[in-house]
Image (cartoon, rainbow, N blue to C red):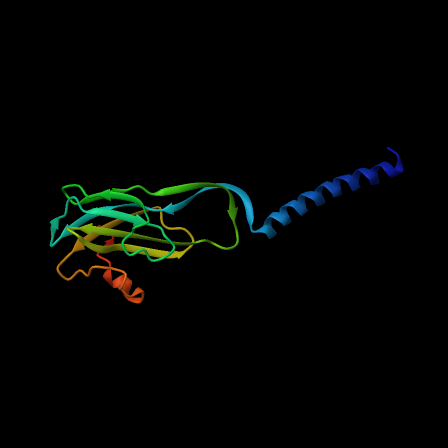
Length: 168
């Protein structure tokens, strides 16, 4: 090997390493990396619905993921009914993504509206930064004290109108 060839070979090797470092650094600065994964857009929701401790069948359940408060879940992405035992099971939604963001998690909001006998109730609502949980089990109880919701319901007190609680 001649005297200058070793130096030239090392320079090409260093140049290739520099390209790789530049590519990795650029990806990190852009806030995303190639990492195939599934993101939960809407959780799988299941549970039971009762009215005055009796199973409530044929109630209409709507799940809305609108970024605004959607009092009647009119922009529902999924609609279902309870069975005769008051049980319900609403499919969740996951989306495949090839890139994973490292900076800036998304904001999510979803709500479950219950329509029973012409009355509209807020079953459950969750919002936050990141991704919603994959599944949610609810116990929903409509009583004579349960408050109906409409466009005049104050947003600041919306959580006290919920008729569902997580868990069985």
